[in-house]
Length: 203
Image 1 (cartoon, one colour):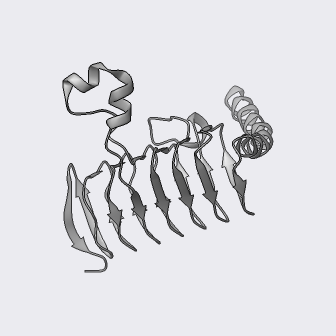
Image 2 (cartoon, rainbow, N blue to C red):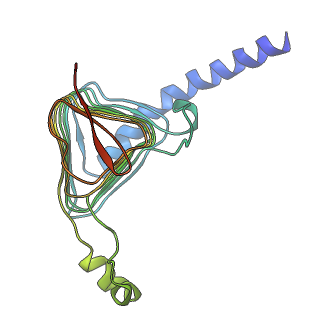
């Protein structure tokens, strides 16, 4: 009996909170000067930070899971958009507890699925030169930045890391926990650290 009561209260709590997440996300997008097309769905609280020179464009039917209650696969961080460059997200994109750090340019195509706890970085953040790293301003200024392009219909497995300067081709599949350090051709499966070719789609 106590178990039934507990589960009922838990469901009521989630239903009540679900009425808050979307309006809060829309306000957060608006305050960061992000125009959102129809079909946005957000479950959980996000972290969004867009600088004055940052620009975010989002297509239709973006679905976001964020945080403990809506990403049950582990490592339940919030979904994060940290944008100083140009971030483009296409139509029908889904992501869960994803961190997108855009210092220069990140483009995500249509019908892309991004697994839980994936991170996408278009910058090294720091120099490999220890002398430069001592000077925090110089370190940030000289960090290498290169565009990331994720094309249509890509599936990225959970806990993956997408690094600067890579292009992932249409229909490609990235295995869970992969680290993408170089371009992935269309219609291929890649996995590992660093990720390597595994197979062709449908082979």
